[in-house]
Every structure is written in C-alpha cells, then in structure tokens.
Image (cartoon, rainbow, N blue to C red; front, side):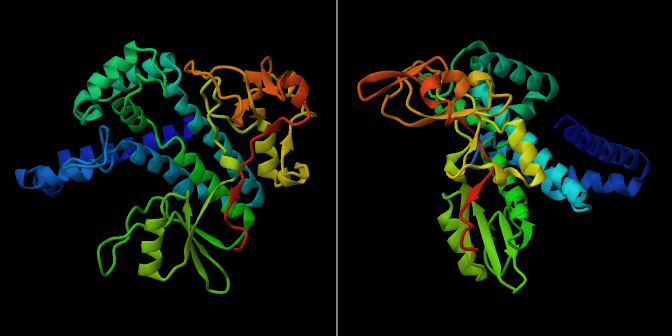
Amino acid sequence: MKDLISRLGISVDHLRCLDEVFLEHNEEYARIEDILSSEEFSSFYLEMAQELYAGGKQPRGKMRLSRQMILGDIIEYIFTGRVFYYATRSQENLSRFFKLILYSVNQILMFDSITVNPDIRKLYIDKLENNIKYEILYEKEGDQEVAAVLKESKIKIRSKEWTSEIDQFVDSILPKTLGCPKELIVFAELIRLRKGNIIPLLLIQRIFGDRNPIAPPDFLIVKGNKEFYGIEVGYAKEGQSREFSIRSSVPTFAVDLKNNMHNRCPICGEIILYCDKVIDDYSKGTMHEKLNNEGKYLCKDCDSFNEGRCKYSNYYGRVKSNTFDGVEINQTSMMHYHVNCVRNLTYIYRNKELSIINENKEYFFAQLPEIEGLDNL
C-alpha cells in the first residue's frame, strides 16, 4: 500500500503548494481565506475540518470525532474512487485490481496486531507523535494519557487491564480494521459476480432530500430490467436499511462474509489472512474450481503447507491450551486458529487426547473471500 499512500500524499502536497502560492500572490484569494479564518467562521470551520482529520474517537457530545472512519474512508476512496479506473480498462487490469484489493486487505487486517503486539504499538504511537502536532493528534481529552500508558505497558486486548478508554483510543488510530477490509471484499465480490451494475456509496455518509438526511446503504445494484437494490455490509444496521428503503422505495438487504471470516486466532491474537495461492486464483477467476465438495480450499497438497508451518492455513476445531492473554480455552468450543499456532497442540475427543496435526492434516483449509446474502438476487 506504500505507493498508493505516497501518491495520495503527493496530491495533498500539490494542493498545499497551490494554496500557498495564491495566498501569497493573489489578494482576492487571501481575502477569502481571511474571511474563513475570521472569528465569525472559526468555530464551525474547525468543525468542518474535523471531518477530514479528527484527533480521536468520540461519537457523542458537542465535539464529535471519528478518526477511524475518516482513515477508512480515505483507504476506500483509493480503491472505489480512483484506482478503480485502472481496473475498467481490460480484464487483465481487473484481475490485477482484485489482487491489489486482497493484498491490501491483508495489510489492513495486520494493523489490528497493535492490540496484541506491545512493541509495534509503541513504535506506531511514537511515529504518530513525531509527525502530528499533539493538539491535533490528541484533540480528544484524555487520549494523550492513554497513549502514554500504552507505550509503557504490555497489556493486550481482552485482558482485564484493557479498558474501554484504551479500546476507543486504539480503535481511533486505526482505519476501521475490520469494517474496511470487509467492505472492500464485498466490493470485489459484487464486481466478480456480475449481478448488475455496481454503484459504491461507501464514501457517502448521508443523502440530502426533502426531509432530514438519511444514511444510504454501502452499495447500489442497478439491474438491466430497471430494478434497484441497496446492499448493506454487515447484519447490524437493520434500522438504517429500513429507513432508507422506506424513504427511497429501494429494497435494501444485508450481506456479510461467509463463515465469519477475519477471525482472531485465540493463540496468537492476530487476524487470519488470505494466502498467496487463494489471492492468485481469485484474481484469475479460478478459485472456485479448486474447492472441494464442502466449498473449502484445502491446504494438504499445497507446497507451502510444510507440515502445518504455513502462516495462512486454518484449523477449525477444539484446542487444549490457553489464549494469547492467558485464559484457558474451553475445550468444547469450536474456533478458528492458525494451523502454525496449534500444530504441536492437542484436543480432547471422547476422553482421548489427540494430536491436532496428525488427526486433521487432511482438513486444514485456507480463508476465502466470499460473501453470503446474494443467493436470491
């Protein structure tokens, strides 16, 4: 993602150069800027500016801050607002675009590792403090103190010491690490499935109309027979979808990733990612040809599997062990794990202790970018 972010930064630098030259050499431009900087404008001008960068996460109260949403919107703008033009030029370009999305999704999911990796978390907070003014970085009162605690602490998510204040702060410095990847995968899948003409609305938070503004769904699908459908990513926004449908007469429904993907491995605490072979096959349109009868992409014959040492291979089942935060795992619970994290561990079945690697080698599988909820469309 480095080059994408770098080019985006150059665009901002370009606009800054344009603004500075006209401020210095054009009287009318400077006069308008004086108006915008005047006492009359200053209060609400700052509030408007906070929609482009907000120093924290505070959804309620007079000062509403939503940095995680802004950062996520910027990432989604890269893919749905600009880079998508590249994908429209040929089928080969579209294939490369799919590959870019899935590798970028992996990178965004990796950002979540600051919740379980204190060392990289400290490096990241230090980097932010060295590059962003404190009064902007820590606009939300109390965040600077939370950051100071985190830099000196080894605490991890889900531990007793992981407070709601810490959770909000960490969430605020990351770009929607679960929502953004999910929305990008749904975007890719809607294009791949060719269910209709796809209109992404990810960057449009509110639609103005004859009454109060309403929140649109994440996508619109326009079919050749003039039918419209709204697509909402995730099953937790029924009220919002219902309001949009009532106000617009556009039927709206929810989709989500199949099999609850993007799981956190209970052993290491990191999110399970997509492997290179799945990404390559998906981008070429051949992934579904390689699934078994249960719809799984098995790892047993892959050269990278290496007796379970592959960092992408999944195990879904029981484990006799402790979680990354030291809690004993309920041995009746079926959960997703990295095979590499459990390959030397065991589980109890019918009062027998069995080896995970020996008993399940034929069934380990790779995570797939698939969505559910479109079957009847």
